[in-house]
Image (cartoon, rainbow, N blue to C red; front, side):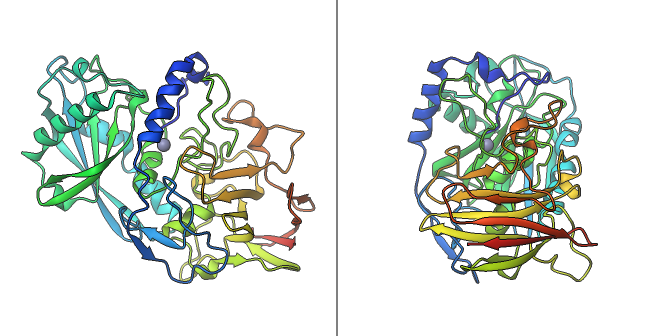
Length: 411
Ligand SMILES: [Zn+2]
C-alpha cells in the first residue's frame, strides 16, 4: 500500500477519522499470514534472522516461494482499464511513461544490475463492463467491491492477454474516471490464486495514480510483489506522523523519500548482496569498511561490504550501513553511517525496521524531508553512537578515498 501525502506536503492522514483507521486494522488482520513455501538461501549465516509467519517478514534465512525472487529478468504486464462512465483523455503509452523506464531504472540501480524489470505496457484500453463509480474504489475499500473489480478486470483482460507470460501484473485504471481514487493504489494478495491461462495469479498491483503520479510509487508497490514490507507506521488515531520509523531512508517507507534506495537488509533479503558482502559482527571490537548502498560496483567487482549486522536476540538485529549521494540516493539530505533495528516478527506496517537517530536533538531538510527528525540520522566521520538498550557502540573512524566509511563496532 502507498502512504498518503497531498502535493503540498500536508499529510492527508491528519484529516482521516478514527473509523477509517479501525477499518484498516481489521483489513490487516484478515490478510493471509501463511508463511508460504520455503526456499533455502545459501550462506545466510548466524546474523540472518529466521523468516516468520508475519506478513512480509524480514527474516531472510529462507525465501518465501509464493513470491518471485528478483534475481533475474522478470516480465511485467501493464493493463489499462477504461470505464463506460468516462472516455479516457490520455493514451496508454502516456500512462506507461509515468512509470517506465523510471521504475526499471530504480531496480537496476538498487540491485546493482542483478535484476531487470521488463515492462510490457499494452497499447490499447481494455473496457470494464461497469462504471468506475460502481466499484467503491477507495483506500480501504470493501473486500466484495474490490473482488468484483478484480474479477471484472481479469475477465476483460484475459481475452487479450496471456497471463502465463508474466511475473508481475499491473492493472492501471483511467485516472480521470469519476470513481477512481489515487489512495487506493496497492498490491492485492489473493488467499486463493486466480487461475488464468493455466497460471496462478497470486497478486495484482492495482494502480489508481493521478497523471503525473507520485514519484517512485510503482517501485514501492513492486517491492511488495517481492515480499518487502511497508515500513511506514499508519497512525492509529489518523492524525500522527506516518514516517517515524524510517523517515526518508527506504522507498518502502515513503514514495516521497529523499533517499529512496532500499536498505542493505532488503537487498540482502532479495539476493542483491552476497553473504560475503555482509559482515556478521562477533563480540569484541572490529573494523568494517562499508560502501554506501547507492554506489554502483566497479566493473568486475562485487561492490564490497555493504552491511554490518549485530545479532541482538532470536528475532532481532542491529544493522549498520553507509548512505551517500549516489544512485537512487542522489538527492539525499545527509550522508553517513545509518544504524537501524530489524525485527523478524513485526509484520508489514508494524515497524519491522526502525532507524536509530544519530542526532536525536536536531532535524534537517525541513523543506524536503518526509520526517525531518530522521533526515540527519546518519553518523558522520568522528562521531560515535551507543545503541539504546544494547551494549553496542558504533564509531565512524574514517572515510576512504573511494567514499567508503570505516566503522568500528564494539559489542
Ligand atoms: Zn505499501
